[in-house]
Structures are given as structure tokens and as C-alpha cells.
Amino acid sequence: MPTKTKRVPKDLYEAELERLQVELVTMQRWIIETGTRVLVIFEGRDAAGKGGAIKRVMQYLNPRSARVVALPQPSERERGEWYYQRYLQHMPTAGEIVLMDRSWYNRAGVEHVLGFCTPDEYERFLEQTPVLEKLLVDDGIILIKYWYSVSDKEQQRRFKSRLKDPMRRWKLSETDLLSITKWEDYSRAKDAMFAKTDTAEAPWWTIESDDKRAARLNTIAHLLSQIPYQHREPEKVTIPDRPEAQDYERPPRELYKYVPDHAAELG
Image 1 (cartoon, one colour):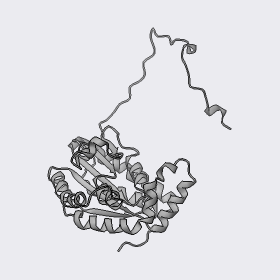
Image 2 (spheres, rainbow, N blue to C red):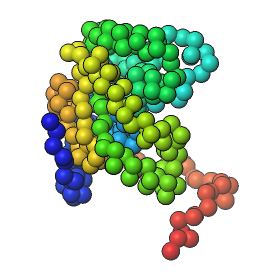
Image 3 (spheres, rainbow, N blue to C red):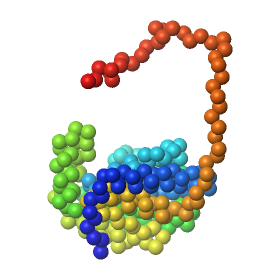
Image 4 (cartoon, helix red, strand yellow):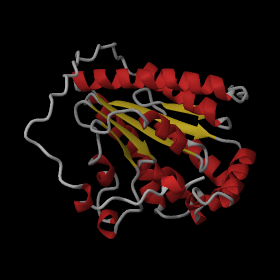
């Protein structure tokens, strides 16, 4: 049983986060060089801290070979496709990391609880998903699945804080609020999902996230432990001396349009 995590002090958090993010960059270099494919799925309760963890994982990675996939509601055309189809087109290519901010597991959670899919579609999902994930793993993709767990009291506190924050108010949708009134329904759905999809090939890893700092550190540390990367020294780069300008005269500045200096007006 997990024990309650004490809040990590800010100075320790920032120091360890920096160390882990340096390791992520090292890990990515190995992934690129070896052509490894990595898919990381982030799921969990609303307001459990998935987005913040993803942001810290991505912060210093090369975006040319690492990306976040956060799909909107399916279009009319996508509703007529095989359920997994719109997700599978985002699978990683050689040398790439894909972080999924929610995934095909929408069907086992919000779609099932709120009645957006039929009982047959739900049951089919629970049967097909382990097969699909085994196929991905058998093909060589490193698949890691994280479930962010947050207590009901902490979720309520985070929802209330979003009401007062204009930069996070968009995170408080009607669907999010239903996660309060349907807390037990989501709990049962999660239990059923784990029972069917927590497999040897693609296990679920639970992250206690009442302390966001601890959750972020634990996520990155565990992610690093799941990739068999080796330290590779970057190619040596020599910055050349800048040659003196010859036969070039810059046009008058007055010919160009400059953004107004808003910063100079502060204070």
C-alpha cells in the first residue's frame, strides 16, 4: 500500500528536477541514436496533475523527436472509424518519444461513465486493448502507462483554485465537474479497466499525486528507469570565430517595423 507522501520542499524539488531533466536529455540522445520508439500514456483523475508532469518531462527535450499528443473530441468522420484509428496515426517513429495526454483509455473512463459509448463498444474495448498493446510492444515500442491518483479532497481543492485563476479557468469544464458527482462511478470504471488492461506486456504504474512536486519527480525518475539508455557524449562542437564584416552595410533601422518596447514601460 502506498503511504502518504510528504510535500517535497521547493529547494530540494528544483534541484532534483534539474538533475532528472538533464538525464532526460541524455536519454533522448540515446533514443535518437538507436532509433528506439517510446510511447508514454498519461491517464488519471481530473486535476490529478498529468499536464504538469508532461510539461516537466517535455521542458528541455528536443521537440523534433519528442511530442505531446492531446486529441480533441472525435470528429464526425472519426466517429465512423475503428475506435483506435485516430490514435494509432500518432504512434512514435524511430528515434521518437510520444507523450499521450489521455489516450484510447477515454473509452474506459469518461465515455463509459457518461454514456458516450454503447455497452458493446465498452466491452469490445476491454477485450481488444490488451491485444492491441501487445502488438505494439511485440513490434518493439516501449509502452509505459501512468495512472495519476488524487484524493477527493485534493481534487476538490484544485477545482476551487481554478475558479480564481484566469490562466487555468479553461481547465474547469462541465465534464471535469462531473468527476465530482460521479466519483464512485469513475472509481468502479478504473477498477474494471485495470482488471482487464494491467497486463504483463503493458502494466499500469500508479502515481500518487496529492503532492504535485513528488508526483513529477517520481514520474521522471520512473520513466528513466524504464528506458535501457546508455550515456552518450554529444559530438564535440567548436564555435568558430566570427569573421569581420566585409563590404556589408546594414540598411537604416528606420526602414523596419519594430515591436513597441512594452517592457521598457514597466515599473
